[in-house]
Length: 153
Image (cartoon, rainbow, N blue to C red; front, side):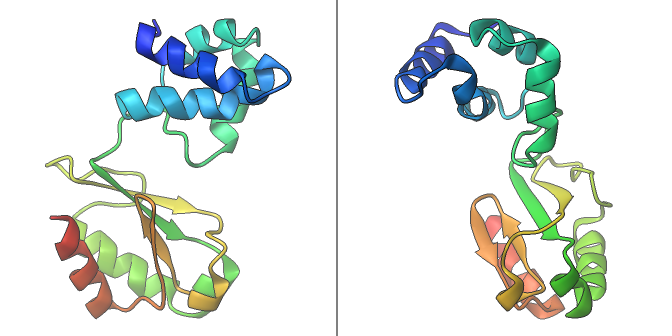
């Protein structure tokens, strides 16, 4: 069930759109910001926006910024694009997995980090690249990864 605060924020977002369905991504992000992820709330959001649950689920599963299961305090998105693949994605990913002790799609036991692959971060000029939360990091090497991870611990 959506909280009153979530409803108010979604209602405010609706003012910026000509029809309710156009605010669906922002509504998902609002709920995610409050709860850390979106799950059963999809039904409540879809009713609020006068959409079917399947329509909203399609939007939620399309955008890699919407989490449909719990994630860690910090989400690491490792770019899985062609530019990253040809510039060192493999060793970077392996170093991340070893450093964190998890595989892609998993969260560290302490809940600090979740490691997720994304099809492209749009940072080909800085490949291999990753994002932690909203911060982009490029030209990655194993040494840089260790330094970057320390900032988030």
